[in-house]
Image (cartoon, rainbow, N blue to C red):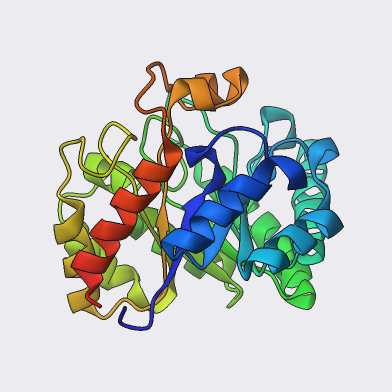
Length: 285
């Protein structure tokens, strides 16, 4: 399919991301035709890098990761101790990713997800950029790329549209840092989403297909075949990811953090097949 690689978030199947729990997920993903499965690095104590590496290798798949930051690890905070905790957390995540055979960590790596009361001060933007630069250098040595996810303005005051994301990459100034764009978030804050994809192309590492209600590809307001087709016409040839969430398939705290209040689907395999159908139709065989 136009040289692209495909990835799907493990949460499409459920919340058990142990090597044993992921085994059916990996088998399904491989059978459907995905190249990668995304393992979130939510609770480090639950991550088993070496057994996960073996589980992926057994299915001929490669892992990718996402990671986030809690308020006490905000790398843009004015308190140097808070920033240091966040930088250490991200560096630890890089080590776990490397050891499970992953080459990319995406997600909101630049600050905690939260609804801000006011615009972010420029000083906080610059502190976060300085912190990401330090992590990026560490990650480059480990062979792990950082892909910063642009999310909507209700979830961050920092990278809430593609232009802001590109400005942040310029402030970071490190070639191991790229962008991760998600159709759900773009549909909220981009007035010209296809133009945004074109603008991001030189630094776009991950384009994630995510429906308006975060469920099945064919059960929302976004024409994801068109999004895929437009991205293909723009010349995007990176990783195309898939994300979908249903409350009963998530840990309660994860569902709460993402505001996933409803049971959108029960069968992850069907959702995975539907998204693959969208990718194949949009990007072409």
